Image (cartoon, rainbow, N blue to C red; front, side, top):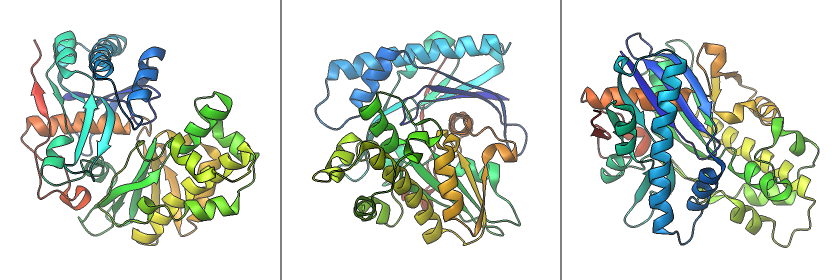
Length: 366
C-alpha cells in the first residue's frame, strides 16, 4: 500500500514529496522529489517563522496558499510518476512550522498548510497536525522522525546514530542489541550558516561550504557559542529557528570586529561541534553516524564532522540505499499509515510525552 508524505522543513527551501511503500520491512521509498516554493510564499513563510509580532491575515493567507500548493504539487507528481490517485491510501501532510515553543507556558507548536485544501484538491485522505497531540501529552512535539529512523536503520550488530541536518539538526541513537531509542534536537543545522550568507551575500545557502572554507575560525566567538544553553541541555529537547536565526548571530558578534567570512567559518565550526558534541555525550562511542537532510551536501561541514567523530564511521543515508533528501517526507507518509492503523507515532523516550499517542487528524478525501 502506498502513502505520500510532504514536508517543508525549517530551511524553507522547497516542498519534499515522497511516495512510501509500507508493505516491505523496512518500508521503501518508491518515488521522491523536491519542488521549489513560489518566491513570494517562501518569503512570507520565512517572515512568519521569525520571532515577534505576526499578522493573523498573513498566517491565514499562507495557510491557504501552502495548502493549495501542496495539493497541486502532489497531483503533478503523481501524474509524472504515472500513479493514479486511487492507488494512494493517504497523504501525510506536515506543512510548515511557523512557531515551535515547547518550553513556553503553555507549550505549543504550530504548523500551517491547510489539509482541508490538500484533501479537496487531491481527493485523497489526508492526515495532518501530527505534533500537537504529543505536546498536549506533555512532550516536545519533536523530533518525531526517530521512530521512522528506527524502522529504517536499526542494525542488530552495529550501533547507529542517525543525524538529520536540516535547518535544525537532530540525532537518533539506535544501540545494537537493544530496542531502546533516544532522539533529540542537537542545535543548529543549516539555520545559522544559511542566515548569515543570506544576510551578507544575498545567497540562499553556502554551496559546499565554499565561503566558510575561505574564512578562519574566530576562537573567541566559537568559545562563546559553545556555551549555548540549548546545546548543553539534557534531552528531551527540541528547538527551531525562533532560537537560531540572524538575531542570534547578531547578538553573538556584537562588539566583535570580525570579517564576515570568518563569522561564516565560525558558524560552520559551531554547527559541526554541536552535532559532534551530542554524539559524543549521548552516543555509544563507536558505530555508524548516518547523515541525512540538506546539510549532508555541505562538503565542508561533513569534513568537519568526519574529523570530529574519529570513533565513528560517518555515512550518508544514500550509502545504505535510502534517499537522504526524501527521508523526512517519507516519515510523514509512514506516520499517516500508522494513524489510520491506530498505531502511535511518537516515542515518549524521545519527546518526553506521558505515553505513546496516535498522532494527527484525518481530513477525508472526496
